[in-house]
Length: 527
Image 1 (cartoon, one colour):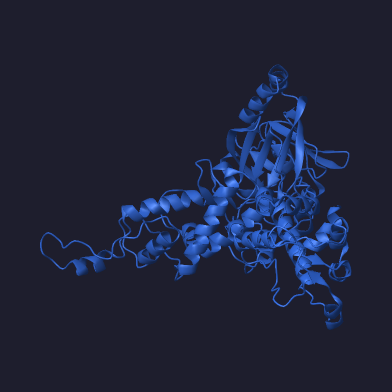
Image 2 (cartoon, helix red, strand yellow):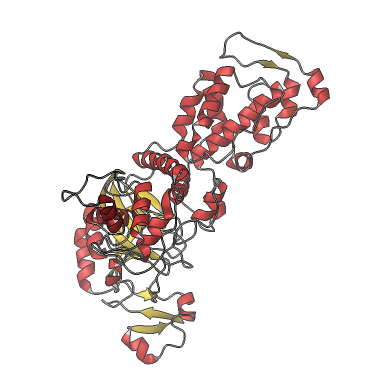
């Protein structure tokens, strides 16, 4: 079954059409079995009238126009749909109200809902290739109608649905976090915390009670008992409580540090603008981000390359997997808003020592327009055949190593001469390429793993622009995951600086325009 026709089915939920009165009067329905495991006998012409569209038509043709849904199978489907919140899909209607539908219309409606829901689990409710101009990361390729037929024949409808979503620890952690944050959001009453001066531990500030409440509702701070023991000196404990309610205590600071860690903010315990933005997000915003995260994970192939490099551009972090095991994690710098690093998969095929940098036309026409000869000399630039080229050296924008990729987008990993930028919390700073922290150390690691250490060291020490092909290409996936599971196994959140969550959230039934976005004023000419 081609995905083009299946996509037509999965992009919208159509209302169940009731057969007209003439069809109802001529339709013959008989109970085929007294057990719950057999579908009813429905006249083939009634099924033909109800099964509109290529996918449904082919589905029932393969069944010789026999009904598909026994009472037991229908119950299993309805139970799966009732439990769809664990996939962040509880705001989506897959099966409209079937009350009063004819047997044929009901059977077709169940099939349509089953395929729609199965597609959401197997490939995502949304289609990244329609949301983004560039998206080349492989997606699952599953024959859903065939799978549903087999599940109905074997009586394993529930088991089939359970097999479609990702079976990873990360997906399960995101799912649990979504359920927890959704529950917290329903019972939350929140007042937004206003901005103001920085708050340090030991200081009094009227915003502290709201900060504590926000930390409690998000699960970072255990709620204190409503009553406290009387003071030893017999004083008025209520007066003391009132006096200390706005005190920023070490207990609250500890919770703030954990929140800062989870949001990629400097974990200094000081409450500033970025920390307040994270506090104001709250469980409702967390749930929204997590629902989007679950759909993004469903976009991905269930069998990624065992040896690969995954870059999370939302977290500005790289993870290196070798034979299925994570072996290295490090900071990166990625594209700034407006010059976003695209979501693609492409392999590294060689290491480039002491690279030169050919400045793209877009940078030539903007940042470098009108630069003086003194600027060119200072930055080791020259004109070559109509292009501006930066010669090899420590000050080169690509640094001392480039990880060449085959992607057709001129996107690659590389070193940088501006290494102090890795100390920033928000690292969406580049023109789209990925700058790697301690890139030389990372190149040494790859050269060792691929058995080309001698060639690499010779190229490095030559001081010349040199190429070292890898015996096996290493796939790189450039992903965008604002909600993810960190190295310690905890769910973490990053701002949706690219604004790419909004259309997915809308499709999932959430409001648009949510989520904090951290901005940076820094800009440079590097790729």
